[in-house]
Length: 350
Image 1 (tube, rainbow, N blue to C red):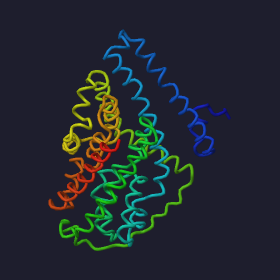
Image 2 (image 1 turned 90 degrees about the vertical axis):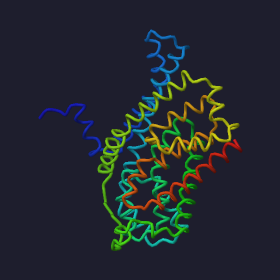
Image 3 (image 1 turned 60 degrees about the horizontal axis):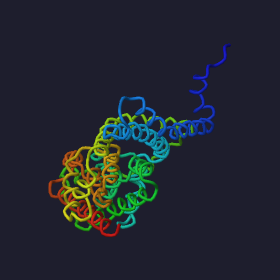
């Protein structure tokens, strides 16, 4: 019998020695991450471009940030894919069903961080929560938190701005999700569900145990990478390209005057611009990074980012299948108010 080749042995590691595989993968990831700055500078130096020109700066930004974002995204999505294997939709509904408002809003917003649901999952999740008897306000806390305070956003913010900004964003996002969900629950908006949703029979939420082994959870991590990174990489390239252009060509004084603290209208304008945009955390965070480097105020860019992710027009169109116009308008109004408060407060204190 011939011995296994190196590639065949590597492919078998996740099943036979999953912990060894995870350790080797972490070491390889770290080595690649450490090589990004010299590699990006070498690429620019190899081109017939002066590093100190606008084009040279934009290219270095693109060559450095693209692999950096993809590496961060791959690592975090892989880890969260393993974590997410514990949180099936059935288990999530079971955790929230029967809980009182307030505590349930906090639980729902917190679950949004570790669950792999995005705006494309809004309708089936909404229906499942309603059938399981989850209160309407609690459901909205989850639907706001899941796309806005997810592993992709937190990973990219940590990689680009450090843990303080990542924690700040997480705290702000959770606060907006909890308070907005609680307010919607207090407004008693159940009559503004579509009739067919409101009249659905209630069903008990099963706990959804899966009993997966560690190798199976590793495979779930790989599946998450294929699904999520495979979907968002075009947004990453587009966002970094826009960020590179801003980094290389947009004058700092212009951006500071347009999105700085002195312009009181910058926060409302950022929200108005952000709502109709079709993007996600992977696409918008590189743009946010470039805006901050050019003098934009932190509160303004946070408001812009939150509005893009939490109030995207495609999600509103999807939710129209289960919500009447008045409830959608209330949802947008409450969340937008929370985002505006976040922007104004942080522009005032930072």
